[in-house]
Image (cartoon, rainbow, N blue to C red):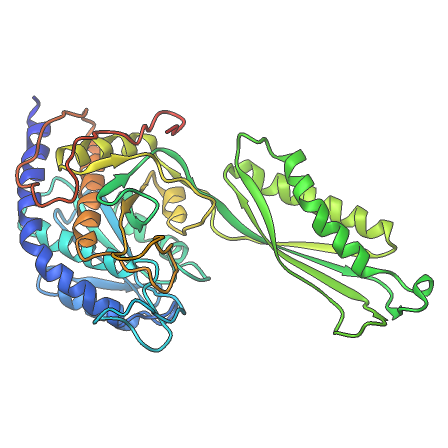
Length: 431
């Protein structure tokens, strides 16, 4: 075994033991953060509390308005970053927990867990001999636009701190409790919005021959969109367009409106399909509108790009998860979106998913549900997922191969560690 591999294995053992000492306080911090959620764009109190929890160890600098970035370990050279989202959702909590939030704002996506896990991981690492810097990214505005991740990238955070890879971990009820899913390749979709406006000549419903029928045009455009998707994108590359809003007229039965509108979400998993599919929808809308004597204007509002996990990082994280005593799981892929994808576009990065449950709820509440409330030990699982990601990234930067073995001090983990490396990350990220 090379000295570098031995060093990482020893680091993992000592880090895992140190983490166990930090977790009780981190679980309490999670409850405190859960009870005081902050909406996107207003995360300053959350940032202040997290920075305060690390103020004796790390100096943070403000970025992206309500965000912050701080570094521990070697001050120079490459670094690995871990991300925690600061914002909550405009959801009225219905969990009934003693630490439930009030006021119509809730951590219904588990960001409180992520925040506490990052604090625990950073504190546990402070007195260790890290081979590479460890950067905490406290990111605002994950749930809304403009993206906090994009602003941090554009602000030069990656370059300024020499960040080689970014690691994220997200709780998810779709993964078995106590397991962590990695997996290379496509994880989340690109999320763009499409607006189609149809304009014509309004008129009286009794004299349709003297008007242009924008209602008929917009209806046929809406019905034609699924066929455009089917005929444009390979069925081997998931893609969809869902119409969320269709409006025409102002409530009168006998008035033919001069304008109608579609507002839809477009999800694609291959970067090349974003423009190709939009161009096909625009062409269909224009031709359909023309057939009804109207005109169509189609606009794309660009959202997050597809989240593509680095396959080598995913494979390495699976290996380290097994050594930390954490079960692996099949890759968690969906047409949901996460602005972590901007970090993936900047440097090879990895998003992991930690399996959680809400006690006493059947069926299990989904993310963003007012009853979604993982147990406190979710903090432990997310922290170890991030640790595995750091270790895999360190292997990548230091240019060493995997070496399988058990890590001491992992008995406190959730999961038996019997299923090693089950995320199946290959060159194309197949599960």
